[in-house]
Length: 346
Image (cartoon, rainbow, N blue to C red; front, side, top):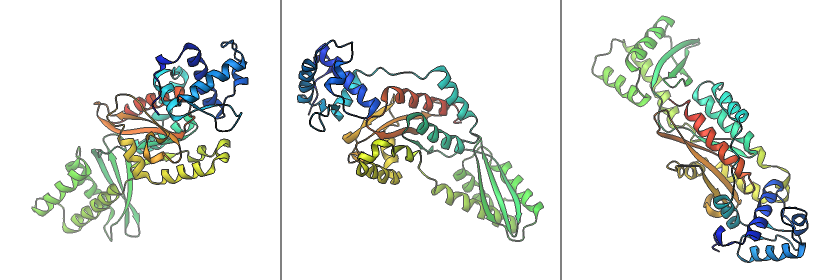
């Protein structure tokens, strides 16, 4: 059903509709005419309020889940509210400082992404999601640290400050040779992505231009193979805070929550949904069945792209939860978090 534009609702209907939506988003429960009649801003009798509620239900903006149980907004009504009536509450100075401080203390970019997802969950009371940047970091340094028993820890440092570790097999390679290989790789591969680095090293070795002996060349090859394989397996999406979805209201609709948790397990599909927000100029809101993936669970997604320091979109972050999310508060929080995370991306 197509809802009427906000401008076609009478002033009285807009006021009552707003109170119903705001009451539902706050409590998660239907709002009845008796509750509305106690709001001094209306100055209407319960009978007058019931008449307006019936009109709003007739045009598809409200629904009555049970007889005499009050009304709650439909997905159509929520969309009308979000697009035409919602007044966003910008993050306070204290909230902005808390977000920036938490991200700055998170360390390498991988930890920053984890912290961002967890923080979005905390801020929204729902589940937080962050897509891992699709582009590869450029290398700043590679160090091989002997662990004993024929193994070494390969430590890769990116120009963006990211640090990753891998354990590789080294055989009987002595410690001084590991240092020599580390220095050789770093001196030739600085500023390149892992893919570029792998290609350059293999070309140099194949052309006989490498100063490394055969044992060292084999070590480089094994190390690059491990990095390349792990990069291909890197997760597309980080999700934190699923436990927040199991709140008190979830007990009334366990099937919906079970469906949502099942959907979140399919991270490839969730990532594809978030991908649609990459080119958005502002935070996008998907409500219930507007998005096919979460149609059965009736969930809402609030998503925003985040950019690197050059303004290029490198990922998307957001939250997912029941349709009664506090949109007015969460939307600006997601937007500000995206801008804050972008400052950390090289």
